[in-house]
Length: 173
Image (cartoon, rainbow, N blue to C red; front, side):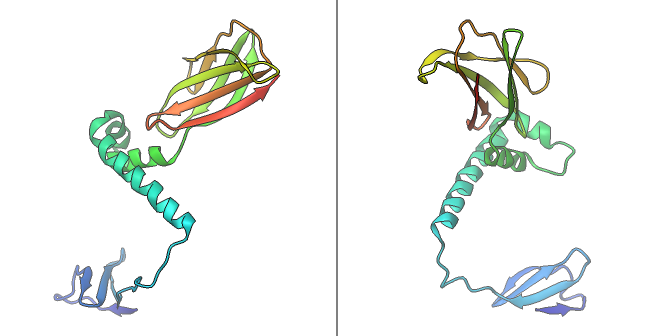
């Protein structure tokens, strides 16, 4: 890789000419290198899976950046675009931090980098059969609250985000 002194011919030059790649660096210098050769490269299954996951994330972000105003609102003043925020939202599922049972209520703390859209509570008996299922109500901040009518052995909480990803967590009694 060669470092080029700035002159009027090369000032601000970036991109590829022939087999040479010109890169403008943040300090104002220009670097020149040969073009990379990926012709013999083979990808592993994990790399192909990751590329496919990113393709789906990019497709979602292109659509969501135009159709969901929440993304442009969150991007305002941050140096990010609505596309960046939507891409990040697709790549990060919601997180359930804790499930508590207090005063006859089930409290769930769930967060996402953009928005948790719903939390579903399922109460299971000793054999793992569903006793009761319903949506929790949003409380303050990341808190969700559910008033069960029946008792069970296990509480299963599912948190959903805007792209439709779901995370789940269990709490045994």
